[in-house]
Image 1 (cartoon, rainbow, N blue to C red):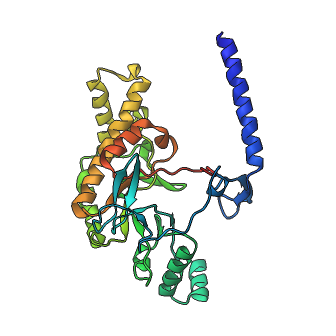
Image 2: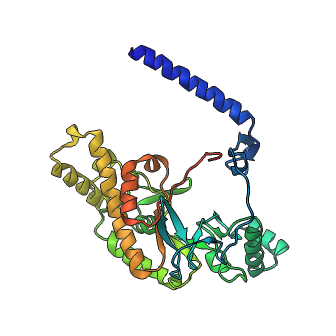
Image 3: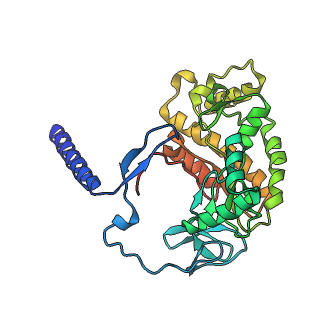
Amino acid sequence: MKRFALVLLCALAAAACSAQNADNAALPPEKSKSKPEKKWTEYPTRGVEQLAGFAPGAAPQLSKYGGWTEKKSEATGFFHVKKIGARWWLIDPEGCAFIHVGVCSSSPGKSAHCTKALNEKFQTREKWAEQTSKLLAENGFNGTGAWSDNALLRGAPARVVYTGMWNFMSGFGKSRNLTHQKPGHAGYTGDCIPIFHPEFEAFCDKYAAALAGTKDDPWLLGHFSDNELPSPSLDKFLALDTSNADVAHSQRAASEWLKARGKDKAGITDADRSAFVRYVWERYYEVTTKAIRKHDPNHLCLGSRLHGSSKESAESHKAAGKYLDIVAVNYYGAWGP
């Protein structure tokens, strides 16, 4: 019976794959490449216009921030979140339901190549900001994402919604010589963030003081506390070199946590590993969110950007949901909803 069920499941899976392939064949291809030097690759991509029964209506009326004026809630003067019915929404400062559609790394750049191009096309950085804000709006974007030149774009005649990208953990790790550069994000000694270092909390409080400069800006959506951080691994924390005073705290914290569960290294289970993930993330979000809200009580806490195994972990999301207004996930390589 079990064998029959397995065969039936395989047949259903094969049928589903066949149907998906046939469906994909009818989808318009979109070209993409991961890096400038790579080749363009075509992917079948599903947009809203391919959804069954979809019919575009009249263009919606938008607030000055890009919010949907027909779906109103209370106006607080800043972005906030609210559950309306069964769905969570961003609410803009005027009380309108809002979906942030922003472009990451909206910046003129600092390299010689970028500077040359900027001078030739825009002449000044201020003109770049003015024309870039206009370009975003003309193409359906209402804001920018992480690593954008927020200070420059704030001076443009037509404002766009923006987010703050900060480095609480990577900044602390760098200050203790515990980081190294990896593709796209910082790496850490032993692949473990120094979350249990006794000086981390004081560092975060001092570091967050810089957030007060924009705490009254209604165009600011919220703050990312870090970029992609490595998913906490109980085994890696326990294997840290205790001769390094700056990582010994993390090793001892993991050992004490395991001992409190009545376990030792030999008896570690996957349930222990999963629980430790939540333990580490809760400590990280508790400390960073407290520091952010102390110096900027008006804007949303977006946390670190979950990726890799962290985005698949229920414990990561439970910890993030306990302290954050919005959980940010980097979802790579997906083409179409």
